[in-house]
Amino acid sequence: MKDRIEKDYLKPNERLDDLQINNYKIIQNPNIFCFGMDAVLLSNFANIRKGDNVLDLGTGTGVIPILLAAKTDAKHFDALEIQEESVDMAKRSVEFNNLENLINIKCGDICSATEIYGKSVFDAVTCNPPYINDKHGLKNPDMPKAIARHEIFCTLEDVIYNSANVLKTNGRLYMVHRPFRLAEIFAYMNKYHLEPKRMGLVYPYIDKEPNMVLIEAVKGGNPMLKTEPPIIVYESPNKYTKQLLKVYDINKSD
Image: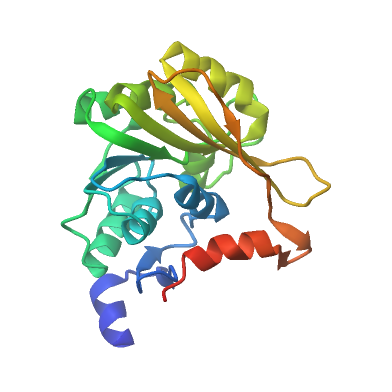
């Protein structure tokens, strides 16, 4: 079985990682980019409902729609990614997991999402966008990793503008980002009529500053923001908290 998988699905330097849910696996190349904890936390935070049509912006190798396909009763997932190598891996992962009828991967730019899909199409959008703008941090010299982490092809405003456009009225945006950009996030959401409704902060340790924020916003929603209990990742170096282990347990098959 292993030989068949490697022969039929994997290219040089790629690996097949177990997602620990529904026996789903994902193809990744560590020389390009591998998904992180932020994708897992976002898939757990997103409240995808039965019958939803969902768009994942900047899908990378497709981890978020694959995880959500296992966890939810959504009707269909579209996923958009600008890097052709990642699109190729995502499509092969979808095929490997027999999800071709549920997940459609497309190569394209987040800035063109409105033109690609049209307006008021989706019930929910998920997005794990590049976190860093030109004013913060050094760019990774490895271009695929730089594209995933830095606003090279799209800005925060591009993400929020296109998310708002493709969402139906009362549709939901689920996004993970960095807390130091919360003021910008809320300003752009207000500009494009997305009302923040739910927010959760993620802390590496209980005595450290948060390094991730999870946000749910509703298109055309009424003002009222609910703050979720904090998520603490580590209780000591390399030892997850029981809270985080519970999040990962949700991903495990019965």
